[in-house]
Image (cartoon, rainbow, N blue to C red; front, side, top):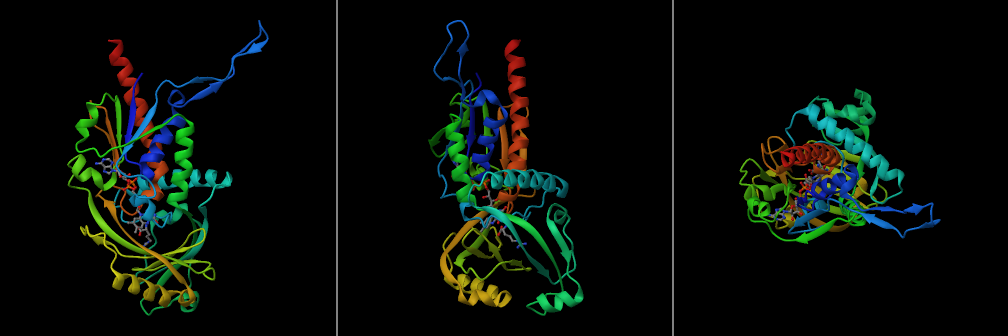
Length: 349
Ligand SMILES: Cc1cc2nc3c(=O)[nH]c(=O)nc-3n(C[C@H](O)[C@H](O)[C@H](O)COP(=O)(O)OP(=O)(O)OC[C@H]3O[C@@H](n4cnc5c(N)ncnc54)[C@H](O)[C@@H]3O)c2cc1C
Ligand SMILES: NC(=[NH2+])NCCC[C@@H](N)C(=O)O
């Protein structure tokens, strides 16, 4: 009976743990009514759970990097292979549409403008809806700055991480999942805890815990404001105003190798002013809060099983962890299944 543990409780940890439960039936509690025709009776609900899944983490939502995220579905600050990114994004979008169809909170389509000083059409635009490259005439109407030379309109989604992780956590617990609050100093310590499969989703924490110096912080500061008048998002080369259920997230900074998580009030003022220049209606906004966190940035997302080991890595999503989460979680499930099969074969020898 392999014991599976997921390290980390951000969007990638919780999603991967839930994906394992949903995709490997023996990893969730299955309630079955045993109807025996002979005595025309039925046993009380019988619970089967063969492989419990445990999540170990030092911090939980709403105190993870994931909770600070604006929830925009758009690949960003992730230099991975673009086709891999697009594949993961597509899988995530399907999951968001299922989540929305369930009427759950914190997810919706959002439409708006991407204005830039350079003419470039990102490949990931192919997964978006209602894409329209702005004509010169339309640019004249929409541009807010002389450097806004090129732009496009499209529809994407937002997925508010805190609301979504709350829902995922409820499903995970319903499936018999377990939580353990603990800081892991070295991943080898977990191997000694008797787990057979270890999935590492510790984001920037992997720099120390796994000793991976390729993962580094990109500091991001944002504001949450209330401004019901604003109905479209607007992203340009430096700033962004992104819709959420009842608020707007204004960003944004991307300072590589900056570890400082103290909010800089001067920067907050600049983020507000620059976004008001792009969307004048924001002048009437009510500023609710400011946030800073560190994007777990890496040349590529590390999503792989260690050779002949029991560790699977899923970290380093940069500014795209919400965007890529379900695609990466499902790829992890395939690696877990493969590892369990190997384990079964070896134990037969
Ligand atoms: C300002 C800002 C805005 C963003 N906006 C967006 C956006 O709009 N769209 C998007 O797709 N992405 C966005 N991102 C990026 C996104 O937030 C990250 O890519 C994502 O949160 C990474 O998720 P994760 O689960 O891998 O890591 P995290 O959320 O950092 O979770 C890591 C987990 O591991 C735990 N952990 C770490 N080390 C240890 C240890 N040693 N022992 C035990 N537990 C440990 C932590 O406690 C935490 O629970 C934004 C990021 C920032 C900073
Ligand atoms: N700037 C840009 N192209 N898009 C907005 C990025 C928002 C979010 N991923 C983040 O801040 O990481």
